[in-house]
Amino acid sequence: MDRTFVMIKPDGVQRGQVGGIVSRFEAKGLKLVAARFEVLPESRVIEQYQEHLSKPFFPSLKSYIRGGPCFLMVWEGRNVVAIVRKMIGATNPQEAAPGTIRGDFGIDIGRNVIHASDSPESAAREIGIHFKPAELFAYTRVDESVVYEY
Image (cartoon, rainbow, N blue to C red; front, side, top):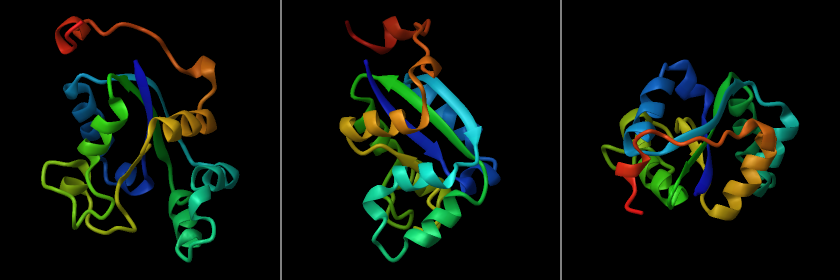
């Protein structure tokens, strides 16, 4: 099975959206294999967002991400990266479709509730930044036989 990294950002945590977001992924049939609350250290924010280091918005992004606890997760499922990206919606909540996480919970691009890996390669990199292999759990959901056609 494929894995992806998902992070509910401080605005999502502070607005009490963790349970609703987790429920959406579980209802879809995805499997949560790692999770924790954490205020990210600066070094990991820099590593996570390395492609944005030279952009003018990076200082405010770093401050925002470090401004409160994030809820870090690893989800597993077939084609999970693409599925999660569709579920979270466009980066700008004003452009995100209703029914997506950002479309339903976000208002401003600078406070867009959630991050998710954009490719399998990014997922592997981001999971490695935030989780040790021993923190990733392998188990079988009781409904896997009806979620997937084997």
